[in-house]
Image (cartoon, rainbow, N blue to C red; front, side, top):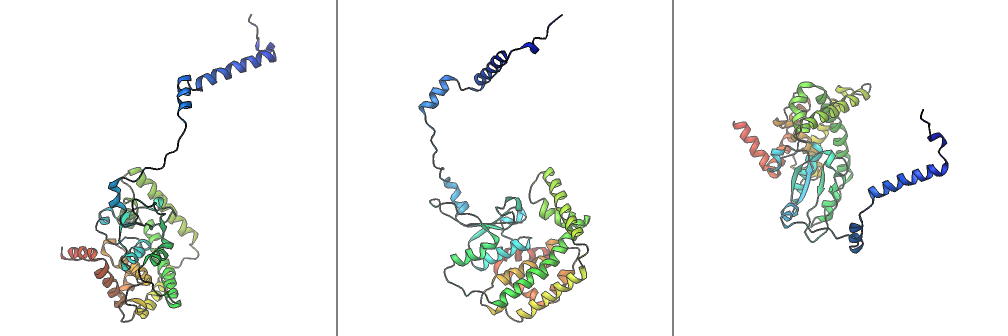
Length: 318
């Protein structure tokens, strides 16, 4: 009959056993003597970053605006399909800032929101920090050759009207779009899902994410959302903007378009753009009913997005 010796093991024996185990582990993970000698002869040195390759110069000699965009539209500089991105895309063009757009998504943005701007830089200079959307206006003002007058209270009031009343209607329209299977497949999926990746798994994850978020937003505001009230407020906003524009070319009667012009164009263009394939034309009809807003949108297209105007003409001819 065998004896259980573990119960009679002395403390000294247990210590010796633990010491042997620790010694074996140390031997397994220890650096061999030749390598240890080599590391001792070559101290750790941190080198400065390598310079960018020469071929990168063409990629950074102009600013890059990262926006929501179709991949096939990026090279042509066509308007973004997202109003927040299009607003700043138009504003940069108004101010003759040399730039190009690059398709991106919120996950790639340092702030988590598109758009953001990467300013141009020389190879000899440090890479500048990305500029989030809420700082683009200040960056343009700091880098313009001639100073401009600060916007007045009227400018701020109408900009707030647009950003709240019209934006609320736009958001409500998108929320309904995400939850409607037909509209989601024909509009939202090609714009916000397929443009982010070619991976089917990524598509499936994003579809679940955006539809769940839209559903949660709708449920959260079920008691407070009144679609008729939202559209009535957006109609009043467009009416006020139409009155402000009057017969002028640009809002506030300026010689050149301002950020308010860019903000209005960002919505009116996308609402009237046939490539958006809206099934609900209620917001678009509000713009169409005010001819000077339509003329304003077309004026911006003609003068600052001629490539988009050419494509529109080609579609109408075909």
